[in-house]
Amino acid sequence: VVTMDKSGLWTDGRYFVQAEKELKNSEVELYKMGLSDTPSIEEFLKENISEYGKIAFDGNCMSVSEYENFMKKLPKITFVTDVDYIGKIWNEEGNRPEKPFSEVYIFDEKYSGESVKDRITRLREMMNEKSLDYHFIGSLDDICYLLNIRANDVQCNPVVISFLLVSNDDCILYVDKDKLTDKVKKHFEDSGVSIKDYELVNKDISKTISKKTVYIEPRKVNVSVYSSINTNNTIVRGLNLSSLMKAHKNNIEIKNTKNAFIKDGVALVKFLNWLERGVPTGNVTEMNASEKLLEFRKQGELFIEDSFESISAYGSNASMPHYRPSHENPVTVKNKGLYLIDSGGHYLDGTTDITRTIAVGELTQDEIKHYTLTLKAHISLMDCRFLKGTPCSYLDAFTRQCLWKEGINFNHGTGHGVGHVLNVHEGPQRIAVAGNEYPMEVGMVTSDEPGVYVAGSHGIRIENIMVCVEGETTQFGEFLKFDNLTVVPIDTRPVDKSLLTLEELKWLNDYNKMCYEKLSPYLSGNDLEYLKEQCKEI
Image (cartoon, rainbow, N blue to C red; front, side):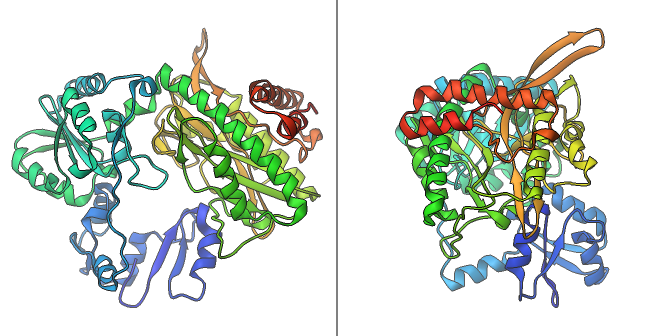
């Protein structure tokens, strides 16, 4: 937020340490979201501009929900929604990148488990249940999901920049037509999907939709598009119906995802073996470790790309949950303390996301204690049982209880939804302290990633991906549980066994035994010996 005499950056707990470093010696002040003494953006604006002031922003870059929140809390302010000063400066400097351009490709039904026609039919049935004439979709992963397509317009997210408008009679994709091959055009034609130029979306909506009921998700539609919907239409708001479909993975998607996690496990074991053999030489840095992991992933069949930029962090750098290594500031991984790697990959059969923290040398008592508490928190969620209909936010306490008992907390969510060869983060499910009343449901694929972070010292996170499945039904109701998908050993060297219950110890040993059984057929030599050592019972 920039005023005539102040500027501020608002960010959450994932970036506190990083933001402080990067904003040092600048005029930009850091505002730590979620802390009781941090003013919201609205409170900042109230204090720093006049009651009848004017605020400008680019309507293409702000969601309807954000905009309406500002209008509600700043009722006397004038908002100008079509200003892009930064873009003008960027263009004048001549260093603005070109718009992303990647070729769209078909995502085969053998991976998706459902045809485009069937998905659109399901969507229309949901629309009819709500008496909707149109459903406008502005989220790229939803569009690619519905149309069984993928692309590479956004780094680490296999999507294409586009909009989608669905009615009972039409399904219109607004996209750069140059990105479509003849094969993809035929795919759309056979599926009943029409193509129009991306830039026509506002004009088209304004011209063609009148006196209809239009459904949108305010968080995923920008102000510019929203403003083009004529006021004689009725707007209905809610979660994208396509997001609700996408969140429940079908049996083929889950089966394919399990295959992807086996390949990913093989890559991680090879990587961790390479890392541990290389650390004593003094030649392993955070950045070349990240690059080496990508090399191992590329050896896996059907690999596409990383699912996000790897967080390769040694020692105190791991205390920043979303730390990013670089060649400009190389950090050597030394033969002491803890190393954290949070990474993932897109394969044609599934998307992975995994974090492991390993001992690379002598550990302090705090590192051992915090690692063991993180493991306890991880197991607690992975092994929990809960009633059908339980809101996602309720599950967060399963994870944090053992940390809270020790006066410890972490400033990020415990679990996020994971897409199927789409965005590695997706909803509507999210396990976090912040309220999420949407229930965890069968078929949802979600992460389990508690952590402990001590600024200037160390950071620990253990993450597996899991799928919600049916549990038992008793006289008290239907219960659900989680099945694990991730197949990478959990390091037992930093574990203080005295802090684990017998049930937790059994879970850990059983998990590592499973990893050995599933990964050993694909490994040999030093890699197999490393796996055997890592999976040894304690």
